[in-house]
Length: 425
Image (cartoon, rainbow, N blue to C red; front, side):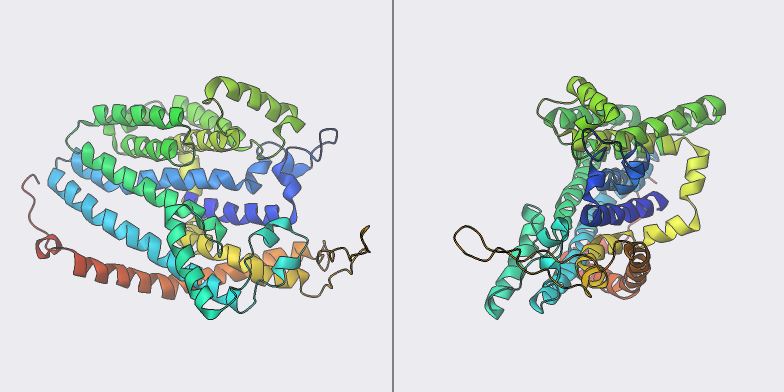
């Protein structure tokens, strides 16, 4: 829970960086200039959003597999298979319904012109992710339905483009259930072998977003429930402390790989050269390094007592409770609330003159009120979005849960609603 909360917080930080300081995506200010503090290895993990996506996928594999793995290890195969069928249905409802609500809200504020200022500011990321109102009421309804559908077909959603990850995470969850169903009668050691084969398959296929991370999460779930592994680790605390710390260190270093211009720094250029030997041809290193880094990081965490204790802190667990709400809400609130706070009092610069044909050049982009004021307003905005996320969790999430349960009651067979005594218990 704590790791998910930290990852969701860093997703927001990454989008703030893309909006207000896009140069942080590079490892230095230029090929000839030194880096600033947050462009350095390890520290730049604070502004790298792709690492958080990889962590979400790993946690999806880990969390969705824990219960069926525990049941199959105990011999309760029937309970595991029944649980997989129900979980697949519930997971879909609990993923899709809140996303539809968030998209509808973003669509609504868009039609009322709430993104109009965002279309004129000097932040390319804010401008590019801010849709314009539809031409008519009928067109608006058509656009809403279209974007709700394409969120799940190809990840496209003009009203909230960061929802592109949701279809992949949902597919990843279904991959977990399919794998657990197919291996329910397989012994744990051979099931781990299946995971390893599938991991290599997705590695070779170039799927660094979901495939390798889902199966990394499955391996972590097996390790966390394997008594022999846990006993072996507890009997060798010093060895596993050093090993897990090294994995965490190496994972964070790989998570530091820059999204833009890796050749601007020696350390990232060396990682690029090393990637030629370990990654599939023509793969995107800015996806593979965060995936591999997140794999190593989470493997180190499950064997590191200190790391688990830190991530179990109540503050991080509270962030984890709000993580999905924050993911769904932060981008629309960035394009509205934060944009109004930073740019609302500024005026749009006049046209810089005329072109050679005598036509007026486009107006300039609206600058923020003050660069220094950002250091006050951005933290204030963080407080506000977490307050809004609390309200979402208190009111919207329960409604979505009740709707999912209602659909389950309508769709499931009567015998599936009754918990039968287990023959293998």
